[in-house]
Image (cartoon, rainbow, N blue to C red; front, side, top):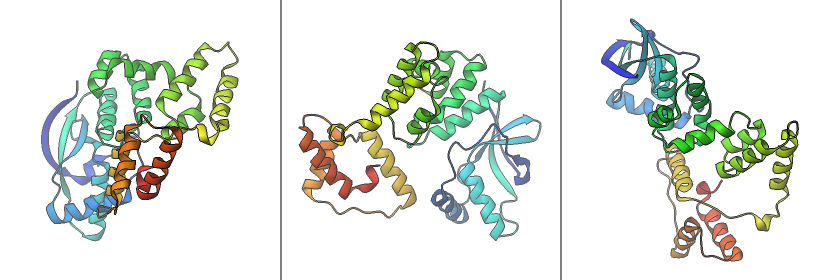
Length: 270
């Protein structure tokens, strides 16, 4: 099991990268810049998380943006942060991969597809569904659905899901159709499902914005631009709340409210 062995203060050169322990998103430049300024002014307030595989052999598990910020500080200021604060954890590789994912996914903007590879890896490492769910703080049904549909998921479906162009509910529907298809017909089933999505009339497409998605996208904007402001009217707020409620509106009214939200709060609608 994952265990925090100690907190330490180690030479930065000892903290290495492991090919299977990575940041699950591309580094956000604005986030790195924020950490760079904050660490210069206030120090490293939260230690990096490192895996001690062997004695004094450290691999980074959590804190990729902070480490990048420190490396940039060191490039500009010789002698700064020759040693850094770390939380030293121990465990086996699959536990470290799970912890690495958990630390990355414990952010507001985590997507379900960020979990796929690690859940499949842990399942192949003979972790039970209950153990995976408990470690990630998810329910067992959620994990079971990923194990059922993702191994045979068409790359096009996965790419759309990861990009936010396809919901998990719709991806599961496609997955069920694939599992029910006769042998050899799976690709045709996916082709038909994707064609149906493309062929839907624009008027039939639902205007949807969930509270979770709005919160995630606003957090992402504030991360990129902490000083962002909005100038809104009462009608703007009413349209936003109506869209977030998602019920009780005729299609024409829903489209009108959604159009207003798109215009006034563009960062919330992707």
